[in-house]
View (cartoon, rainbow, N blue to C red):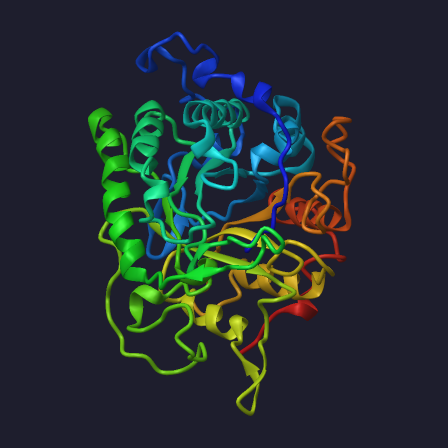
Length: 411
């Protein structure tokens, strides 16, 4: 969730690839993918839709996608190539790849055209292999999607939506992890927030009510069904049902189980889903506070939310929320089993693991140096775990070392 990223690699050469591989072609002449490989996830499921709170295929049958998220391309850009995506599809069995494009943190705002072109290149690669991709406008600090630093969002999404309106494999995530941090200004402690401001669901909804129509308008021009749009929720995508409760916001001093006045502030668009992120070492059965042993029990909270809203878990890790530290596979099992239908709504919830990268943090799936060596199976303990999970969920393989029934959450 609150990734701490210090320093960047100079990877300008990686951003030279253009949308459709030819920067001189106008958008309307560029090749985009509408035909997908036989028996690929997109060929099987087609244009996704939300039906009765559930992500479904083009025929209305429930679908659970499972895959990986990239790290920021400005740090780990050499990890994201035609070859690496092919390995993820052929050997890991992913059905979705989240393309995490940071806006600040030395990302999009430093080179909008270059980052946009890199996004298009990766979307095209995913299309070639018939997997879904999530176009992730990755805000982090500031955590308010309405901040002027994110003023390029509407133009960015309008461009992508126009180009890929005929492509079934594109999903949109319009604001990663809204949060109260406005500024991280201490160079000695760059992970600490030095200035805060409240970011509520109403502020997120104001942003979404501008961006979603910009996406939809481009699809309307070609008569294509509206795509899936994932919308961030307060407190780094933890307070998922903030649209259903008054005062459900970061820093309200309430336990998750405290009674709050109900409301209905859901977004009034089709095919909208609400983002949930977890890091199992930190977001689990809660902690001791105010005489309770399970204060802030995230398992109990999400068990019930999954009967109320359509949810997409676009990011999770086995470790702490900073993307580092000790791994907790048993608690991760508990989450992933819940997302596989063992919840109050019996929903199948799609998920992406953070992250396919060779960063030095424990959340990385690859060991440092693996991407430079093009060794896409040089796995960390996190990578070993998630590759097994993907083989079980997407490929139907048996593996008793992950997703153990003994770890199922029961309320």
